[in-house]
Length: 147
Image 1 (cartoon, rainbow, N blue to C red):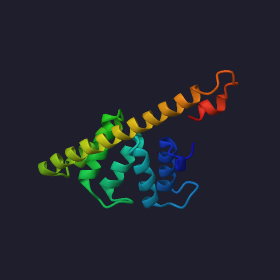
Image 2 (image 1 turned 30 degrees about the vertical axis):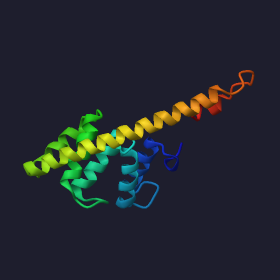
Image 3 (image 1 turned 180 degrees about the vertical axis):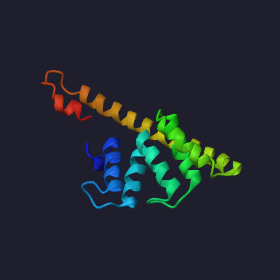
């Protein structure tokens, strides 16, 4: 699947291409757009990259609360690299900002969980439709793999 079809890894990779100007014109705004799309689906590398962009104001307005939130979510999703930058961002924030950022992190996590549930429900529906096809028909492996 392509980035346009919703593939989180492909979206993250396209974000990297735009951030670095590899194969496309360098564009931090488009990098942030693709990182956000991937991050909202739970891709921890995209979450980290989006947090980094917020920390430095690249492609998005500089916002330490958003940076903290996305880096926290990336760390919670298993990306240990996020911890170092999370510490750097935390040093630039007040206690009140950290409390607000933690609240943002929780909201982001809820959105990601809802997105995953929706995707899983859609996958189950497609699989059930596929499995209900006439049992005597030859199984189309390509159709099954495209679910």
